[in-house]
Length: 325
Ligand SMILES: Cc1cc2nc3c(=O)[nH]c(=O)nc-3n(C[C@H](O)[C@H](O)[C@H](O)COP(=O)(O)OP(=O)(O)OC[C@H]3O[C@@H](n4cnc5c(N)ncnc54)[C@H](O)[C@@H]3O)c2cc1C
Image 1 (tube, protein in one colour):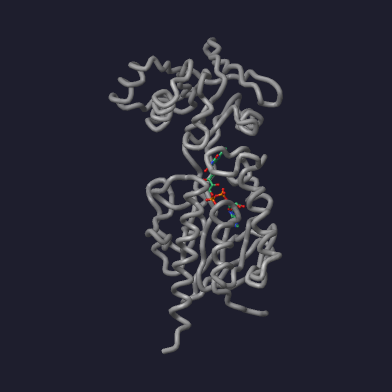
Image 2: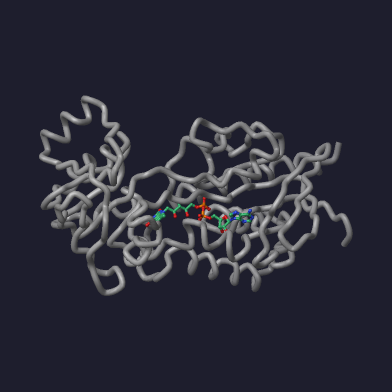
């Protein structure tokens, strides 16, 4: 139908987006859904997540976000609610505008769509370390999870291992302190990869008390084998080889906030979109869910919770607007 105004549009098909779609269609609201182009998907965290061990019943998925999300969409397509879902597979959103009370959505297929409410779930990506002038040196290890990015998700992997953290900020230092305090790994190192450490005095005191060693030289090479499944050491430019079984990268995140910024939504100092408890941003009708949302844990189950809050808040507004006067 030409110029149809959908009640709800969900942008992004990772943890938050898939839950936003599920909740919206189960609330019996029609949902226009853009999971993203193959390029959007490739640069999303959802695509990188392998085994998930901190969410009940997720242990057996090889790809802990992609596989259960595919199951969920398949279930919707076969459910009595299938007519509510308008999925634009492999399509992303390239521009978002608001005219009066309607969002105008320009998609990567060059079509323009309209919606009353938008739930933006475009996520973030972790910044990768440059090793030997490239960021892809670490990818095999990240895929095999000998290199990890999230302490809450994968911190437990350091038990009885030699562990290291790549990063130079106070937040990287605290990653190493928390790993040390929780799991007492056999050894713990921080590699600042050529940057001067920015650790605060109190942080440094604790690092020294725990015997966590800091190396500030650039990493020249990763040594390991079996397509990343075995990490042995980092070879540093100034000579030493730092033996490590597992490494955490703590260099911050790239926030995919372009569409929110285009609408003038408020973001915090790191680019995360500011929103209230229901996910409502400073732009009326625009909600955010998942890693994109400011001041929240960046986890699968928190993304789910945000998505449910946003879909339910929108459903309440839709129901009120349809009540007899
Ligand atoms: C290596 C790794 C391991 C992790 N392990 C765990 C774990 O074990 N447990 C856990 O709870 N959390 C884990 N996390 C965190 C978890 O991945 C995130 O918290 C979660 O994916 C956030 O969901 P999201 O929907 O906000 O973003 P994502 O899941 O990253 O999804 C973003 C979506 O937005 C889409 N998109 C982007 N731009 C556009 C656009 N312009 N138009 C349309 N779509 C777009 C992408 O295609 C993608 O579908 C891990 C993260 C990493 C990096």
